[in-house]
Amino acid sequence: MAEFTGAEFTGAEFTGERVIPELVDADLLNEHLARYRFARRFVAGLGESARVLDAGCGTGYGTAELAGAASVTGTDIAAEAVEHARSRYGSERVRFIQATCETLPFRDAAFDLVVAFEVIEHLDRWQLLLSEAKRLLKPGGILLVSTPNRDYYAESRGASGPNPFHRHEFDYAEFEAALGALYPHVRIWTQNHAEAIVFAPQNARASTTETAGSNDPAKAHFYLAACSQSPIAASDAFAWIPSSANVLRERELHIAKLKGELEKKDAWLQQTLDAHSELQSRHEELTAEMERQNEWAAELDREVTQRNRRIAELQSELELRLGWIRDLEAQLDRARTEIERLNAESAQLTLEATAQLARLRAEAADFRSALADLQSTVAERTEWAQRLDAEIAGYREELRRIGASRWFRAGKTLRLGPQVRDIK
Image (tube, rainbow, N blue to C red; front, side, top):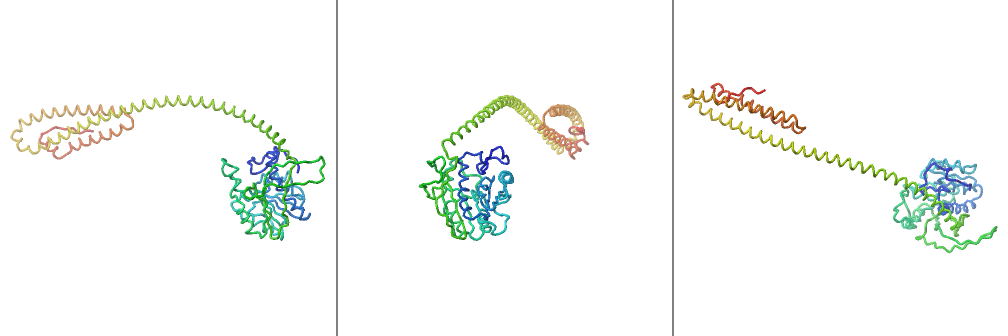
């Protein structure tokens, strides 16, 4: 496979779900490449005329590993991944198409081998991937499908919690049952990423591998299944030791790379701390300003309280004056009952009424003056004092109705009781 630098792929951010060579450490890349090396053995057994589909091919690095077939087609839902794969790995035998795994745009029985590695767990309608693969496979064709072991994966993520990109994860029994529902022949390999001790001459002509690792499905990292309508011959263990399997050297390089990243992060952190310090200073300034505003608001509250108290005093005063008006009304009522008796004493009553009228006029003048003062005071008050004006207007209406009442007009005709002028 051709060499690749991370700068050549800018179509998407690396999230850990789409592997981009040279943007991930060697262990993670080899974990994915190993599946395609496993699949190459099936391609070799199909002959040079074989047609292969890589469903969910990502950036195409694995699709290129299957180029030994007559034609290899890679599909992915992401346009930027397909574009990169075409420019990087496209050839006469290898092509890439944007398509979803649930509805693949190919005729029935078009492929000898379909691979779908680390795709099924990303699909809401994952059953459609299995049925589409069955539709696209020739008689005797094989589907290779892999997925993480749900139990191990949940344990390994620990405090990180569920993978937000995964829609459905499988344990061994569910995975086997889902595949067996469509394919009469299913063989599942466990995939574990294990260290190996390698003894190799400079120019090795052959290799011998002892695979004594655990194949307990419950403890496996991943499952890789071969599914077919026909019996599956392959049943041997497979171990791939990549050229970058010098674990210590790769880890040292990765640590050096991480140190560089840490230096960048430290510089970024310092910038962030400086920005935070500036924000803190600004925050303190705003806090001081807010305290001043709060003091101003408290002063306004005190002023409002004082004004409310004054309004209450004015309302009490008005209540007293209204009481006087009610007393006046009572006096007028009593005057009506005594008109007959007062006729005999009309001359003297006239004099007394005149004096009383003068007194009432003086009191009415005082009351108008008080009302004028009250109006002046109310005009200086804020919005809530306007309600007091409405109440005073009501009181004026009461006085006008008193002057307009029948008994009061009768007393006025007889020149008895107070003379009240029209109040405008």
